[in-house]
Amino acid sequence: MKILLIADDYWHSSEMLLRGMAFLKDMDYEIDLVTDAKDIVTYELLKKYDEVIIAKGNSITASNSQAWFDEGTTVLPPSGYWKYVKEGGSLFILHAGASFRKADCPEMTDLFGVSFIEHPKQCPVEVKIALSEHPIARGLEEFTLPQDEHYFIERTEQEGDVVLTGTSHAGTQPACIARAVGKGRVCVLTPGHNILVFENEGFKKALISCIEWTAFRR
Image (cartoon, rainbow, N blue to C red):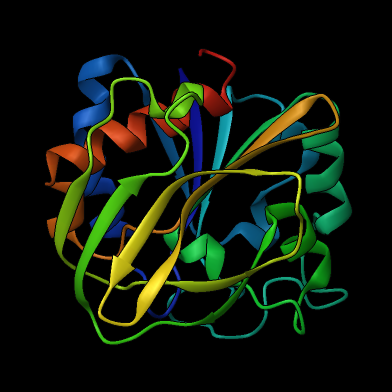
């Protein structure tokens, strides 16, 4: 499977993601990283991949905090991502991708289905199965992350399925939401801030399951 990984912002290292996702190469996943998405990503590029993973917030790069989707800043506006998904594309929003706020970029939060509110300091998070009959949940077991950013989000859609929830001292939130958009699929997985998360076997299985479902392989 060929995956386009769009990553890297001030708070979220693309290096950590590549290290954390290295195990996927043993499953014949080919991952191409783009960090400066504003000048590289086009609709034609998205179409070359089996799946697109967005794992960065609304900033250009880790060293440039200017908004990625300011008018006139980026080659491909939000409408291009909408078109990609509606025509049958596979879009997976991983952790930092869910940090977009509706007030700043409503077109993308409406596509993702979530708008970021806040998170407590990194803390233990219990991930539980909320919808056992969903294909993403198949073969998964509940697990606890020793330390992660526990995202609190506002849903911008209501048709999606909450497959997993995350619970910390701060409360309980959706951890995985999956839904169809046109002919395509969008999946959001909110855990994933540090290498400890990616070393967790339960999270690894959840990550694979989300990738496979979004790419129409389950």
